Length: 445
Ligand code: UDX
Image (cartoon, rainbow, N blue to C red; front, side, top):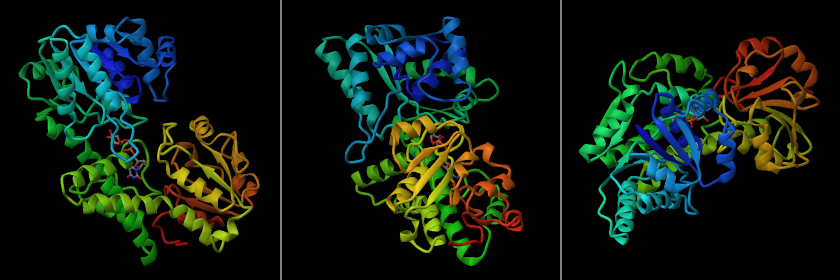
């Protein structure tokens, strides 16, 4: 099938490359010439394990093309994916200008039936706006061309996006058009080989499903973080509690890991956006507000623990804190809403310095914060410890899981770890002479 994808950001590129990999003929369009030029030469604008090989293979074999020409992209596909960004507006709501600009461009250039698929995460009701936009442009053109608008939200996890796309738990398709349903069924047939994963529903329900999934997952995390804070005060160990409740299949083991808060491009944005949508229709979303508030507090937890350890915020001036992990989670260089940022910014505010190491996010950190005296980005995890007072951990990268603790002790001024991801055994560390602060595991600070 011929497919066009507008937007070669995270979602667009994964979608385009994976659809090409199962045999579809894909054109990816972006207005950013440098990005398209880079992609033509196999340079990816994002870090995503496995994606570069798929892009390279499909470009070479002629199933994946890149262009900056909207005419070319519109002419190519019978299915047109909109996968452009929806950054938060000044007031926090999703800015739909890029989505609607693509809709307009499709309407300007189309001359036969098109299925226009919303892949970007957009508020409920956006498909109607896209439809209105296409209709009005077609009316301007005096063109009576049939089209359908479909909602097909993505459920990709950064770092595991290729796998999520290739082996999806479910494919949600919201449509009210029989022809579009047929085409979408064909498009996704290669992903349904062992069992049916496609769930068809009405457009608004599909749009809401995306928010519902992310808000539910964020709720699980905030719930666990609240319990972790409680466990600390009660002298219980949240990691044992986690296993105790996870074994109940109604609760399950997934997404109940307590930590220094959730970050990334989805959970924070989507929980806020859903709460906003609720208010717009006159509903007070008490639970969603709490999920968000608990997370904001949780992202401050490591800072407060560090400050309390030193006897107050005032005693942080002039201290050096080693920081392992900048990305909002492992296997990505993404630092959007990362707990590491909340921690670093609070430390800087208090007059402390940060010596940080992350296996892939250091360039991203440099891009965000530039050169500053109170931030040193270190070559490896051990040199980040040199003459630092204590160590804080914000991301559970594999390389941090079994470090040489003796080496660490020699480099740090004091053997103290603030672990925002509960990756070590508290008893073992205590036995080895460490002061170990984790999340919800006995040691409060
Ligand atoms: C998420 C959804 O999982 C995905 O389905 C959706 O399409 C986009 O949003 P992503 O943001 O890439 O994906 O990362 P995810 O692995 O879900 O982690 C999000 C945040 O939650 C991370 O900061 C992570 O550290 C945190 N988290 C996750 C926890 O604190 N505890 C957990 O148990 C799980």
